[in-house]
Amino acid sequence: MVEEVEAVQSKAKSRASRSTLHLVSSAATLLADVQADQAPRIHTGMIELDRVLGGGLVPGSMVLVGGDPGMGKSTLMLQLAAFAGAAVPEHPCLYVTGEESLHQIKQRAERLGVRSEGIVVASETNVERIVALIEQVSPALVVVDSVQTITTDLLESTAGSVAQVRECTSLLTRVAKRSGIPIIIVGHVTKDGLIAGPKVLEHMVDAVLQFEGEGTYSYRVLRALKNRYGSTNEIGVFDMTASGLREVLNPSEALLSNRSMDEPGTAVVAVMEGTRPLLVEVQALVSPSGYSVPQRVSTGYDARRLQMILAILEKRGGVQVRQSDVFVNVAGGIAVQDSAIDLGVAMAIASSVADRPIPAGIAFVGELGLTGEVRRVAYLEQRVSEAVRLGLDKIYAPNTAEAPSKNIIQVDRLSFVLRALFH
Ligand code: TYD
Ligand code: MG
Image (tube, rainbow, N blue to C red; front, side, top):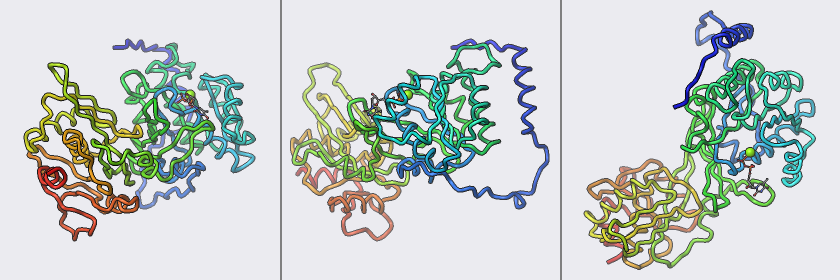
């Protein structure tokens, strides 16, 4: 619980400043008469980022980029700023930082090897002065790194407090809408996994992009949690290298590149991330437990769902896991939310229990139900074609109404797949 003291006087001031923006319009218009804004989107120089944004940055939009510290938010923003700022010489990109010194940014730019002619940098934390800077520079794009460091004169509370974050974002949003300049704000994720008060910011911004990744892996996934100008759940995959973030245009290939073939306990699954099929390797290790309560550890896959899969395997598949520790890991550090991964998780576990590898060239698609049935999933065709493209030509998948592809082995029960592979 955080106590928020509202300064009455400040509130009045903030109202006054709001009304001077002349944003209030009380006239109602027939929707048919409203002109659709067809301003072209601003490209970011990275196909992966463009895709997550729904095809580029929309002029006047407000985007929140969140993620754990060290994920690469500032790196991505600097790469984007260099590209967007280079397009039109008279409209550079304004990069406002409240976190790092200008020297640090220069060093990073040199390390990334980006062109810095199109970037105007400012070390500023006062949002009113940032707005003045925007008016003065007339940039093509504004990056504010990060929202937790900026404050408004209207409030006395400290930087990073809910009230400050909300008020600053609201002011910047109005500036973006009025000027048509897209503004990207960076936000850190707080301990409980939320972008500092993202719930208070989410409704104010047009898009929320989240940077995800596992510490030890270099892969980073940028995910659209909200997007008023595109579909959500769209992802972009990047690789953090010594010279910045590289796009991974062929993530399935990259994720499967160092697959441990002919090893028990691994299975390949075709999942969908947004509109894009992705092949991932699920690894499982099942070993006799030394504890009275066996351990269940899951990385990249929902831990509760793992408990459910284990119960289904035990009860409907006759696979003994009760006395064993079970570890499940989605290789590459990708967190998969698509439930079509279930069958693959179950088969990786079964393969580890049987100590027999799943033959090469096999992939799995399907959600598991509590009775051990393999349930239908969306986008089966895209999943299958991605698997076939990468040389996996036998796909165990649920029954569909449509004519099945020759690569699909239709299955409706988990027990059938277990029998086909391990008996
Ligand atoms: P950064 O963009 O500062 O993260 P954030 O703004 O999300 O906190 O990136 C920090 C990490 O990225 C840091 O641990 C070093 C690493 N990194 C590279 O590996 N290569 C690079 O070229 C750069 C700039 C950073
Ligand atoms: Mg940073």
